[in-house]
Image (cartoon, rainbow, N blue to C red; front, top):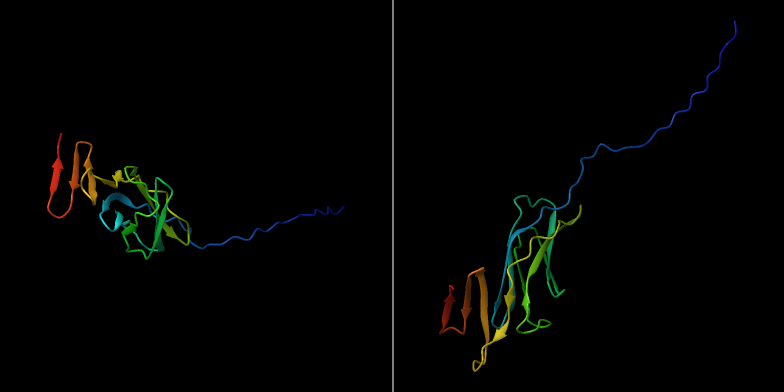
Length: 147
């Protein structure tokens, strides 16, 4: 009786049973407007799940960025420095976390900083919808246009 010797080779791969981590959820409802003497005001709705979020990065369509720390922050102010008057800017928001950043939000409405002829201060504008714009020409005047 012959003995048959069979050689077997085993390979072990290490693995972990730790829970998978996902990127942060994307912020929604991003809105922007220009406020005289302060700059572009950008705000957004916080994600329903904020666990792990360390802050937010807001980016303008012109490439300027603003960072805020904390999961419960939902506003960023861009000083007008570096922005051009009469140019419209939109903004996107990314939630930052250690496990990965969210996808960028949908862009905000377009906000513009401009001065009216004969009026020395910049005018505050806010696009409300495709057919509605708020225009503020100082504390004394307010005009809403609905075409």
